[in-house]
Length: 73
Image (cartoon, rainbow, N blue to C red; front, top):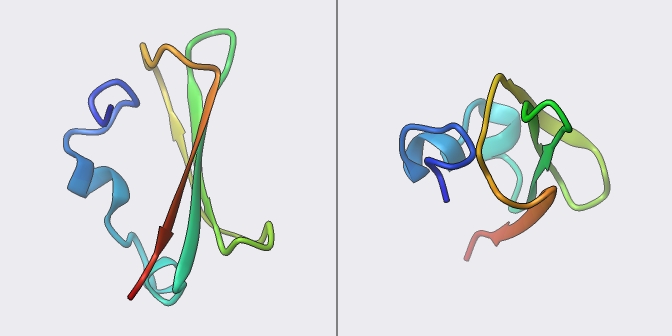
C-alpha cells in the first residue's frame, strides 16, 4: 500500500513528521485520491484537527479514499 500512495516505505509514509504528529496519542490518517490521480495525505487528532498534510503528485492507489487509525499504547 505504501508504494501505491506515493511513499518510499511504510515507515517514511507513516513516521511522525513533526512534533505535532508525534504528540498525538490517537491519529487518523486519510488518503484522498483526486480525479487527476494526485492525492492528499492528512493526519488528524480524531477531532478533525489536521496536524499534518502532504500533497502527492501522482498515485496509482486503486481506491478513491482510505482511512487508517493509529493509537499509542
